[in-house]
Length: 120
Ligand SMILES: [Zn+2]
Image (tube, rainbow, N blue to C red):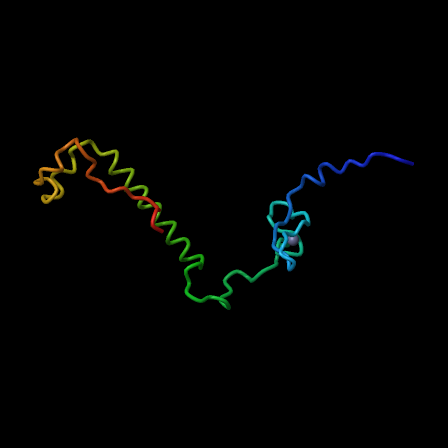
């Protein structure tokens, strides 16, 4: 009784990747749709319950704070897109300081500052 075992799919499955006590990564298979194995927090119901505030220190990572940052980011992107789609020269009358300076001649430079996430 000798047959070749087909272990390819098993060996190709995603691995857990959690760092173990000996400094290496866990090589147990990750649970379906998860990035961790059953022993490293991949199981449903593992971890803190939703809304648990036992370890809250500053609130930066609460779901409300994350949602607020997402909302602000979306508004910034939306407003930047809106301003860029405006016809050229339509913003020259909005700010009297900008329209009077010689270095901001219309059409030569973008009057809009670049809004990015760089500096975060
Ligand atoms: Zn693991």
